[in-house]
Amino acid sequence: MVDNKYFSEAISLLREVVSTPSVSGEENEVSNLLCNYLSSKGYTPERISNNIIVNSRRYDTAKKILLLNSHMDTVRAVGHYSFDPYDPQLDPQRIFGLGSNDAGASLVSMIQTFLFFEQRDEPLPFNLMLLISAEEETSGKRGIKLALRHIMRPDCAIVGEPTSMNMAIGERGLLVVDALARGICGHAARNEGLNAIMIALDDINWLKSYKFPLISEKMGEVRCTVTQIEAGTQHNVIPDSCKFVVDIRPTDCYTNSDIMDILRAHMKSELTARSLTNKSSLTPCDHPLIAAAEACGIKTYISPTTSDWMRLDFPAVKMGPGDSSRSHRADEFVWTREIEDGIKGYIKLISKLKL
Image 1 (cartoon, rainbow, N blue to C red):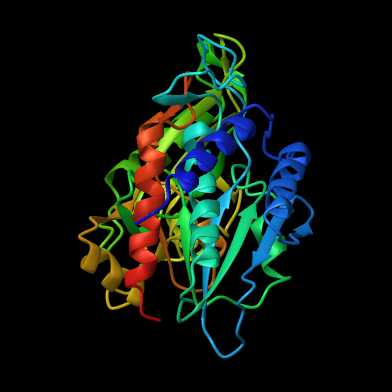
Image 2: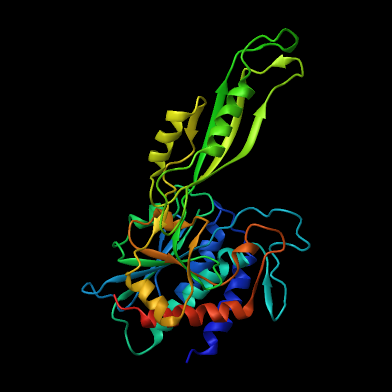
């Protein structure tokens, strides 16, 4: 039985979090708020830049470590909000505002889950560690990657993101490629030069038809999508350059470097990867976290979106209250019942976990 105080405190804390602007890279105030809250519970949070680390009072070096991680930052408000994105509003059933769903609901649910296990009489057979990360939305240098250097390496993790409390056992990576096709300027009327647009089209047509030979049993095929293109300045000038952007969703069969090597071997355009570190992730089917999910009747799936999971070099799953479809859009909200279900779901899962 979970005391209602954990639900009410989570909802109250989330309203405060939403009311405190925390755009990625600008989390100082919300980090202060969360540190003060955890201090009021008798803990001494370790702060690494704006990241927050809290260890169990029952920490035992002989036991394994389960990391609970979610992020405090948000994207900038997008679209046309019908209300102030930093006003959670006094609605008994919903909490509105930027970051309420992604990932504030997971954040406060994980904090209350951590406190629940800390305050009960019976200790867990493993250590709990709480890491609230900054700069998740921008994959910033002062985010979880920095914080991980200051902690004992966990054995596994639950990453809190809005998944409707289903469990992602893997997530596709992200590889964004800037392509530049080079041609030679000429007058359109005289059919001079070398048209960069046509070179780009050849490459785009190749991308459209190419199938990566290795197909992941869990994630399927690598997906490539051209999402932006830019060329030309005048109607009568053959362009000497054409820029386009390719959004690639890798699987566990290829590293991002592998994919870049394949593209460069087949395409004429100059290719530059924005980052090679946004890797795909997949936890083995026989891992204890997945066994615990099966024992709880939790649905598992492969997530098409990325998270701080890609920064972890140990097994993890992604799971949290809220709906991913509400993220990064105007009039963001989360149902209060989802937070209650989130706390109950985390507690049930952790209680079934055998590390």
